[in-house]
Image (cartoon, rainbow, N blue to C red):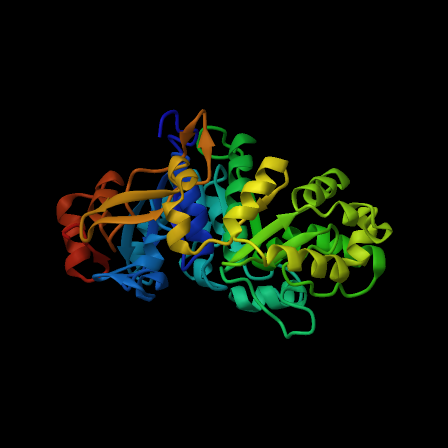
Length: 402
């Protein structure tokens, strides 16, 4: 990437599964050198399918742009070299289970004592303090205990979750934002002013529900599930067409007028029940029934053309194959080919970040387990015989060969 803003920043990632690895990938996409420290068995994500040969597609999806250092963290020599590596870095990022960093001598307090310049970023389930701070958790737990599953789904149905592990990706994004802010504020080797960044996976989901939280705070009542419909604007939901679905997003009175004209429903525009957004939300079901009858009569492409010409926000529901064949997705470089030393060329999503018209994306493929162990240790000043001794002792893995 041209003019990578985080060039020269070294991040040591003790990441597992999604949240910290995704954060590390965002930082790598922005130009940081990210060294991923893995146990000899690898990040747990490496064992989750589907697979390209022996490489996990799950792992590849959140680990672009990194170096892999595979070692046994229980070995005293390894603990010493990890401490040395952290001291020579700008950021230490982790989302390991409670106590794991402390057992390596790399807890937040220890890191800040040995290297006051460090930005220490810890992603945890519920936070470092409070009655739930000791609890482990994964995304399903956070969706359930953030309120998200109480508002997701159709009216009258049981709880639903989002298909993606939204808590992980929110936490990773929040951590990347806070880390870059800490670096901008003087953290790292050059600024010398360290910082402790703490990110809770559940907190990220709660924060992302800001408008739903507002509904609760103003009414002090549990918001109802509304399916694809918005609880605050209307008509703003999915409708069946003759061959699929159309998503209609009316968020203003002008949009409503334009929608009615495009659908030749001028009499609906003048109906007193639908005169304002508040009334349209109140009479959502009646309005939806009128619109559904009309939408069912023509194809999705027919309605999208009419609504686009009218300037009304509308879209379709695409499957994954259609998403990654979409010309706008291709132009935005949101699907990219990467070259991997073991599996050859494979496809993955690009970066949603663009700087000065250029995609902020690392060109370096996700690493094989231990692919850079020898290179990282040499960079730390370890001699080839010493490195070979660690490998022979089974406390470091040289995975440089495909």
